[in-house]
Amino acid sequence: MADVRSSFSEAKDAMQRARRAFHAWSRRQPADRLHCMRALREAIAAQSEQIVADIVADTGKPPLDALGGDLLVTWSPSATMSARQWQL
Image (cartoon, rainbow, N blue to C red; front, side, top):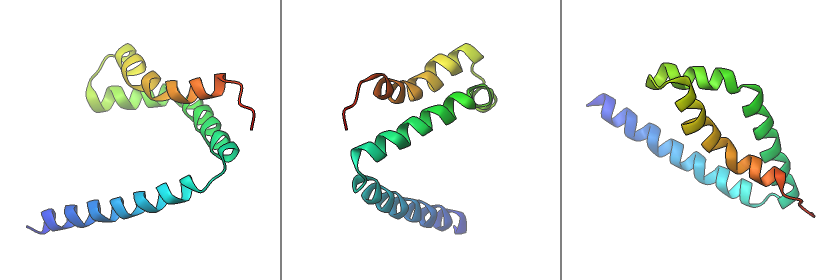
C-alpha cells in the first residue's frame, strides 16, 4: 500500500510542477519561446544517436523505427518552427 500512496503523491507533485511550468512558459515572450525551442532542437540533434540507442534499449524497437517513429516525430514540430521565417 505504501507504494501506491508514494506513486500517487509523486504524480500529484509532478502535476503541480507541470502547472507552474506551464504558467511560467505562457508568460514568456514569443521570441524567447522560439529561442528555447531552437535550443531544444539543437540539443536533440546533438544527442540523437544516444536518444535512438536509449529508445532501442527501452522498447526493443529496431533503430530505424526508433529514429523515424519516435525521435523524428518528436523533433519535427521544432524543426518546422525553425524553418519558418518568424518576424518577432
